[in-house]
Amino acid sequence: MSLPRRTSRRLVWTALTLPALLCLLAACSGGPASDRGADAAAPGASPTPSGPPGTLFDGFQYSGPDDPSLTANGWEVRNGAGSPGIKDTWSGAGVGFPADTTAQGGRVLQLQASTDGTKQGTRQVEVQSTGTDLFTGTYAARVYFSAKPTSGRNGDHVVQTFFPISSSESSANYSELDHEYLPNGGWGSVGSQLDNVSWYQADPPDRVSHTLKRHLDGWHIMMITAVNGKVTYSLDGKELFTSSGKYVPREKMDIHFSNWFIDLPFTGGPRTWDMKVNWFYYKAGEAVSQSEVQKTVDGFYSSGTNYINTVPKS
Image (cartoon, rainbow, N blue to C red; front, side):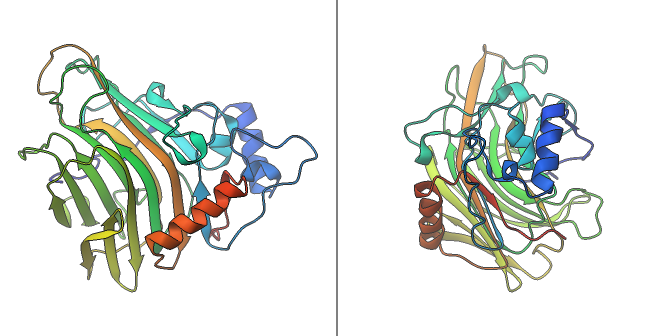
């Protein structure tokens, strides 16, 4: 990637409704709302087990972007202002949690970006965690990348991405680790590629990167391990790139999933691009293999656990 992720971190997020605030308070007090997804347990039912320490897991079993449990579990849907891509075109309207027979657990987080080639007709999409205290350890997600639009003409310079990042680009200890899929290239490159980028500073840009030239249409397990002064990126169990030295996390980060456009190369009518996330897993302070990640995730699904967070708060 040739540009900082954002020129401004001043974002406009979905406002908290009263039910969301109540759920958030319940979560902070250790009530059962913190362990519920869309299929919340009925009153009197046993809460979800606390689970292994230092673990965050979400299977995205929510009813929609306005589900109070989404906010209570620490997720925000972006609306409105800021960069990257087509500035000020972020919209929560592209966020959904549809049923999906190809997904473990049968439901996904869907991020649908759309454009007709004009700024007015463009909708970019992002969902991020907040205050999750994620630092060193293992980050993993099962992600569906689209190599072509769900509808409309192909050719857009779209970026489908999963990354942990500092809450402020002006931080003295700025940290960012990127998995970015560009089905049609961008920033002067041509063809489908996956970029992995470890950042030390956003402005002026200071980072190291690696590019894999490959089509990635379909489901993939994306992983980042950051332990013992080294960051390792992997795709479906295959190591792609490592960074070390100053290009490692220096402070706690939030996790982002986003689907956005670098530029608008043509008009040509409306088109939509779908990115989906089946689940997200994080293990604090440890390098976990893909097989162990999958084994743990399978265990959560088999026990009916849709969400768990035992990561210590700072």
